[in-house]
Image (tube, rainbow, N blue to C red; front, side, top):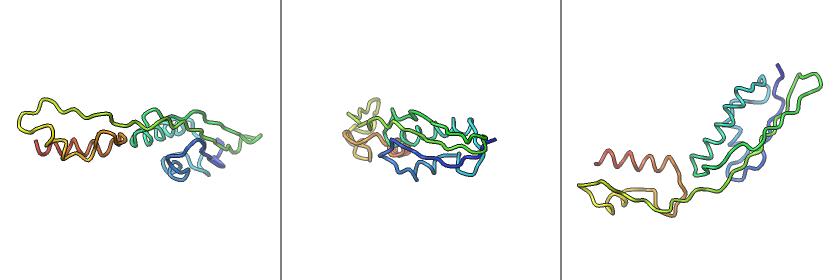
Length: 130
């Protein structure tokens, strides 16, 4: 099994290479694994999705093996896509609170990027209050 000699990431502007390398299970000096690389692709996409880049994906994954297959250099090319921005937030079905009162408690606002952790926190806070 080849050992990963290096990992380079290109196409990234939102996150640094160091931040994205921290998401990966594949690391230099560890054995090469297609299974881990598949999980790493998902991990990169999930990281972008959390910050509103719902169309981000690993565009290409180049592998350069040594002639004797003792090592491999990996290059991960990312297509970040555009950040999703919230157009509007509509509240319906409530009976005891006005929509404006509910939305005042939200950190998430129309015109903001779709940040999943912030939206989930807003929803959790609403459920705890309602």
